[in-house]
Length: 259
Image 1: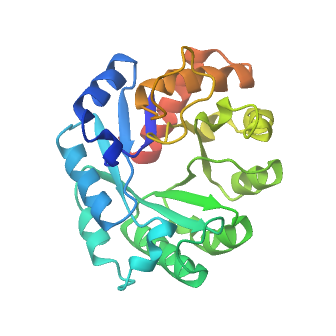
Image 2: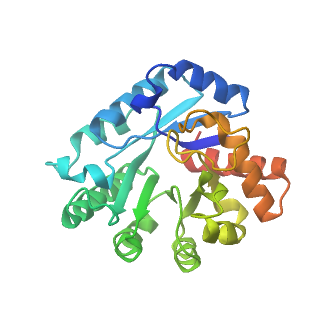
């Protein structure tokens, strides 16, 4: 299994980061992609990945929450990080109109700047979209034929939104949200609609602890070692053999990120 979204730079991992990685390996996670969400975390993620060669990789980008911190839309720091061998995608980038931590015009400008950079460098993009589907696709679509690949990570949208994302050529990342029969009810219904060759799996750790984990962990912190539980749930919902799903999603992730 490859966990395509791990926020290993998060402070909730400060006390036992090495143990978290060891537990992931023991659970069958064969590689992980560490998420960069701003200049600092992107640098930290690249350095962490460099200390785990061949096992951990990273992204470099600016999350829409942090778009307000960007002053230079040529993104020199992200460009520099992208040249490192462990950095395999631009992002996490996109739009978040749910919380609006950054002004929407700034979110859109920073999102497009990262798409331009990814197209120039011929790198895939790791995307975020929350309550911004129409604007997100309007900005993204003109770049799709210039990008090697694009994944919408932590997809939680509707069936209509899923179909439009698939039609645009996106890969879809599914998290433990699918293990929540309250918030994730619609996602559980539509997960079978994702083509085998467009599906990838992730924990988004330390966020989104799967609600159906038993025994229930004492901590609310999610970890990559819980990825097998998420994969099992996805396989059940899709009516697929778990091993077959692991083989396919691992192949998809290796191809997507060039691992």
